[in-house]
Image 1: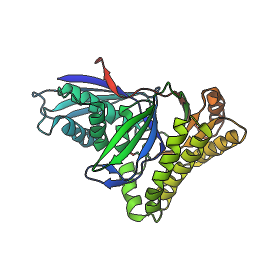
Image 2: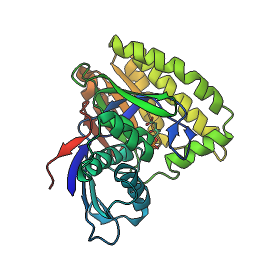
Image 3: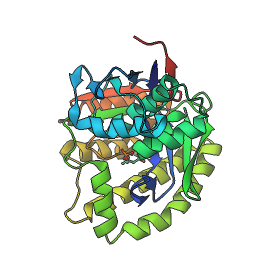
Length: 320
Ligand code: PMV
């Protein structure tokens, strides 16, 4: 009873922020994302009746602190009466720092756990289960451009375009890879309870999703750039106006945004987005990616850049 899976993080262009049901981890708003290819999380899971307890290793270290959430994910896939598990997760990029490592880890864990438990589930069903553990993980079950929609008392996740249909690139500027001060789950709840902008954020989302859907269908980079930057800044405005305020950015984050604005003003095909962390993700036309990376690398406080194309959804792989 063992299996191995691989998944890539995804970056939301129209963001998820806030839950409509905390117990079921259902998002308050729909979202649209792109799945990356160069950032990778591999998860190996073995179930065995002989194991007394679950054990989780992340990047070679035992991580008791991350175990409850992972065990909950395995319970929802294989049932709470499942055998105990050895889970080994390895990512080739910093985890817990706003680079969507929970999305790739829980997407891969869901796929591996289902296979190890002998459950034959559709991708749609796997996406719903991954979303129970991490809202954004549901989107990493699919590659390319992905929409997560609220539907009835659940979610529906669908592929909009494959990576090959519109092969954009992403440059990530890492400005601080230490773990984030407030988890995205806690921060969302704080925003829901205290930000005066929260309900307006939720109400406006359908419009932003419509605009992004049309832009993606038409491969209209400029239109997608406008709505994605606007949606990102709205999400961070909700965070900043929460009490106590949630500010994930640092000086280099702002310098990267300014650099993207300058490049865009000169006709470079690039726009920014920022998640629950200080890293800046620049989505680029492929011919402009090197220019964007060079601009980020000249900024004080940018420790490292990562470059990625768009990639596939979570899938099984041969065990180590
Ligand atoms: O899935 P979570 O709980 O890590 O939340 C992700 C929230 C954002 O990354 C900020 C936005 C998004 O849609 O991915």
